Amino acid sequence: MNPIVVVGASAAGTSAVEELVSLGHQGHIVLLGAEPHRPYSRPALSKRFLSGEVLAVSLAELPAGVEFRPGTTASAVDVGRRTVTVRDTEGRVESLDYAGLVVATGCHPRRILQPAFGALTVRTIDDATALGEALRPGIHVIVVGAGFLGLELATAAVRHGATVIVIDREPPLRRVLGPEISALISRRLAAAGAAFILEPAGISTDQDPTAGLRLPSGRCLHADVLIEAVGDHPATTWLRGCGIPFAYRRKCPVRCLGTHL
Image (cartoon, rainbow, N blue to C red):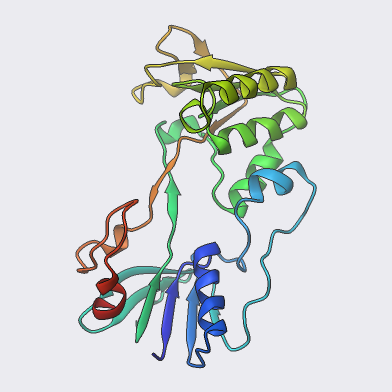
């Protein structure tokens, strides 16, 4: 199979490249990354990178001979012709032939607030850098979402000396870890200096950003930095209509890996 095009240069894409090489593939491999950076570890962004413990989060070097194209986004696939259409940061469009295609485009952060709120999120290293520059002692930070990412970002904000409020529909991680661990996390959150607000009805998307963040309970909050950490959705819109059978959070039929691609 030559060439093999891997779309997505995060953990899944780079792991696919490494596995292909380890299994003895000697043909041409093209790795496409939407960001202008070399592959790096996303989980480290909300932990050691945002806390300032490390300045770089790059992964190991790619195997020799792999063609890495940073700043290149896939926009369409023609399964019949076995081509993938890509666009670079200069706006140049190109059609790449492939014998094998690996789709590893991951997810985009889910957003519930209007862009006018200026809420930050952390998905890329540029996101984490922007948030790190915004955090400083004495500011007020609101984190919408008490999942793993939201709690990690709240912890980072507290460590930067900010006053932090976390908002969610249910107690922190209760659905994932159970009520006992959730209660423990809540106590640790409070001990760290962060307040938690329970809003079972969620936050309305129909709000006036100039008036602050209005909660269903009637409170209106203002923040210097507003962070959204409310989950994600698959980055697969570029695959619509291409004929590849897939469904979010479901297994992809084996035949799509062999026959269709």
